[in-house]
Length: 330
Image (cartoon, rainbow, N blue to C red):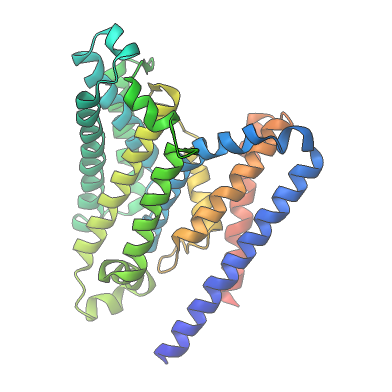
């Protein structure tokens, strides 16, 4: 029985990956045919490697939350607050001239620690509300998301904090071995998360909790602790995305990346993650990010309205959820 279920899950996962690859190829071919002169330029694909990681990390964070049947609507708020707190620290300890000329590596390391610590604390708060106090994840993270955004607004007063050290900007705009530093960071983090979910007891238990919470309890799993640490992980991933975003834009603001929230949910679902829990892969999410980045790049090249693009994302999300629900019932 268990072998049959494992085989079925493997087949479903492989089919989903194959479908995602096919969708990505179709999007690439369609956008190339519609506007080959601009879409096929090297600069277009290079820019994707700088923007891809921050959305990819947020989408993986969303997938981890969904594995237990939850959701994290606060990841963008965590990302912005992390960048703002780091930026506030830099402006407090460095002069304007140092910000523009000095790599300030020791201060940048402290800034990274502040940002990651912010994500850890924010994730722990989400985990406490959801795992310990049993608050519904969508309500808990909606509330904390507003809390983090409000705190960011109080700190900045509204405007962006602009001007980060050169070493911090290198995290978001630098290149190593001909590859974007943010993309290299994403590859390392995505590989670690994939290993954690597929090759460790923690990952397997998360899948079981999402698949059948009652069975997980009867099996003696410490579900409260597992769920708590899953939201700590989403918080840290959110703060890492905030580091890359602020490094790329050389600024941090409370409302940066607001459209990323809908896109992260869409990518997680499109990547094969079951919103009810129990199923999801880093590979599937990564391919889904690439597909949507190609699609978004094509829309921007064809000068689609931002509002129209948001409408398309929302409609696409509903369509994907409807199709997945139908296939699961079948």
